[in-house]
Length: 338
Image (tube, rainbow, N blue to C red; front, side):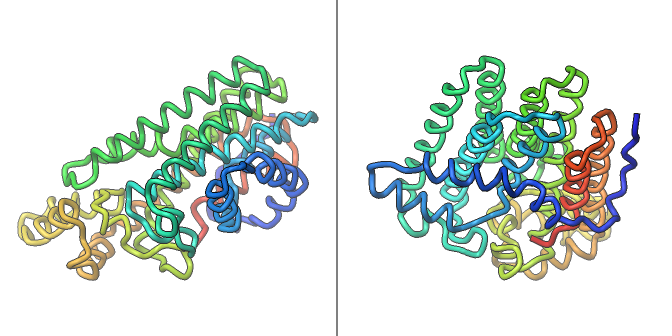
């Protein structure tokens, strides 16, 4: 069996991965546009805004690549990829309302343009549209995985809400949110590719493990970018998580570092205050504390560990360009700048 040595230091050629998936993703995009259509004008307006906002469509791309790695040659993966994107987009619409965000991917959010009520309701429309598509597949195992995944994502949203403003959130609690809110949809996307391809259960499980680890790596790296990027590159404002009182891993590590130094109680108090009340009033000082503490390096190391675990999970799959693309995405998850 070919091994897949983990090496998150090699340059990740995302463009090559995108090219490999391009034909499938064109069909996915066409189906998304078709199924977003409604005779309710406001739904069409918000749907058009969402499509125009772009994004990498990483989750549906993961699914079509996993299906390719599993040797699938049918067309159900197109519909499943659209379902996965609908679920993801609905969570973004709801997230932006909860977070009171006005910028995503460098563009105004739907809630900033049309208001919270419209965004929540169109998010609900996307959820229900995804379930209509699921029923068309008429496969109880697939429906169960997607239904369970959607429910788990909702749990993650509530867990994250409970963590906002809580300076005592542990690394384990933070990772529990990532698992439910982000990683489970990555895992479902790749697992379903294996199921479509009829892989042995051990390889289906390996694909799910790959997706889960990739989801951890991707979200941890995303939280790191909140302190190292800028609005022009990342598509949102630096320090947004801090301003919202979200105790993500860089902040958790910085607070842990400050608490280990009894000679610096002011820094502990400052970091706790930033989490509990939002850090806009002392944003520069808090970000400097995070950077000086080594928290950014620790966060990156944690993301790399998950990216390496994702690569390692691919070792049992047959060698193919699709498997190589999945491995490249593991590298890309911790190398990207947006």
